[in-house]
Image (cartoon, rainbow, N blue to C red; front, side, top):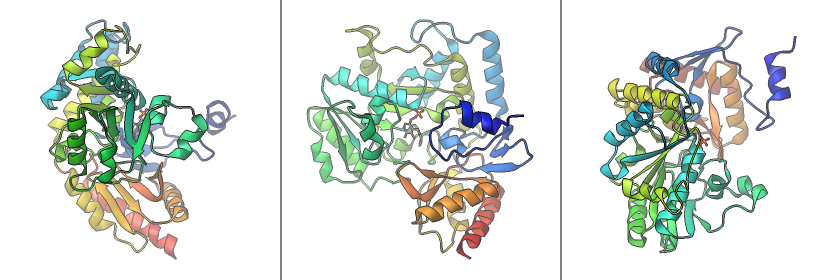
Length: 396
Ligand SMILES: Cc1ncc(COP(=O)(O)O)c(C=O)c1O
């Protein structure tokens, strides 16, 4: 009989020559279980999606409840769909008043596309600024603001008028002018290998955008929903973006994205042309139902409160000569080994030993630690011990 592995390679389009090729039968909390009875600790949360852990009963209940009522009814923006309305209200209740209106889409890339279109339409300006080593998605607009030439070049021409600045370079911010519709930035650059903003950098960026009238777009698709120890990463810096792009954990495990701004901003989509930004499945009722349940669990179970303590536990227990530094905040950490081959081996050996790690798109010398926020202290200690043992073997 042909195995699922063979079918995967034969019929499913591949993204690289080295897929992880893990087959999973069931997932629970931070654990994934394969059909051959192996158990894996998920230290990457499906890339910052499963923040409240896998197979959460409240999310499952909400999904089943919604499926029994209705799934797709009509394209986005026409009918009053209660899960959508309630998720938009819950988000507004947890965001500043300037971010009180949500446009729902299906993915992170689409949230970025929407934010870029909204900025151009609102300001009437042609240019967009982004940052080197930033990642914003794979569609053509999102790719245009991605900060790595090797990913972009084969797909040119992309959208014109995009300039890339150096993250944390204060002088570069002078290139933001009155021609710039928006500046898009990850407040913490995740795929760059978790690069933190230097003190005052985001504040200076905020100031510069205010002075030039350019809109500031924060891509919190990866860092949002408690991952860095606050519900949204920007809350730690005493500033507010004009547009907030969300996805990944927003849908509680189902596909959902959003770009959030003030009503005044988003109202420009209503006219000249009407229907200038539309989507069939954006804000799918089942995804929104899962999103509400997931956000309620995150807030009501206090999952964000001890994220920083858990970070410290990782830092305290991950001390080894192989580790050059640990970057990041909360449960978004990059463990820098300073060597691509060693990092690859570490990821492979950990997988063989039941721990799922990953590297970063733009940083192959570090591995990622971004487990579900539900990970317990005991689990952290046990996993760190096992990681240290693997590093010992690698240094033998
Ligand atoms: C910061 C950031 N922005 C945008 C995206 C794109 O999201 P999606 O893959 O849902 O299109 C990602 C995905 O990894 C991301 O990490």
